[in-house]
Length: 292
Ligand code: G1P
Image 1: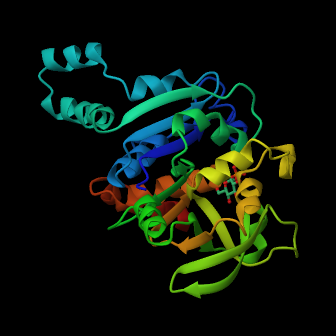
Image 2 (image 1 turned 180 degrees about the vertical axis):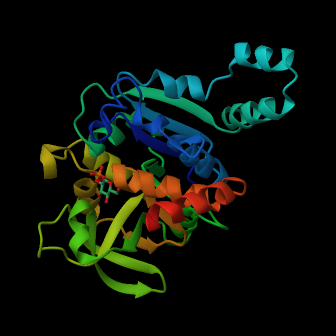
């Protein structure tokens, strides 16, 4: 079965970014000049997704407005004859023509697993994608979600995006244990959310992209709170191992963790330096700052 739907958990309070997230969703913080969540929606569309399900909490109105048409702004720009800016607006408007964006509220912040479970009825028993927009993954060719969907088509398995991370950092992630491997695809035998130092089963960390089988959704309804006293997606996937195949794909692409202030700034700097027009202006400044 093809993967048609993608769940975007976007209900977090963004406390790591206070005060900027006091009245603004963290998903709307820009990477250069585009909100972080837009990168995820563009990736989903480029991967063939037909429906994006945003699981939001309170105070996320700006996300809805961003993907909606702004007729006032269009009139304003038309009157001032700014086709260049109208083109930028149109590029965002076109996203919601190419994919249906549905919003559903997570009533309480009970963790990633609970956010995904909130979307269960909209998913209608199909295998579906889960995309954590904090993890921005830029691919020259095939988008990372498409890489996962292709792996799912070949294996029929639940598929996790993984990358090797320095051992001292894996405690921030969900980490997998594997048996056999076929190129970049590993059979998953166990997984643990945020392992304590020394107990990590490998250096392969999960990085915010999943294709999950319906069995995972069923398990989520029965999963008790785990690490951080939250209902963990990792725990529900783990409970399907043995009955259903779970594989991990070491994806290709540039990974940016925008979920911390340092990671967010790194992503902005790196992307700005890759942008023609900004690079020329920023390079001398960065050099000066470093030398000074
Ligand atoms: C979540 C997942 C974790 C994964 C991580 C990737 O954790 O629970 O398994 O490795 O995203 O960013 P969070 O960052 O929400 O604590």
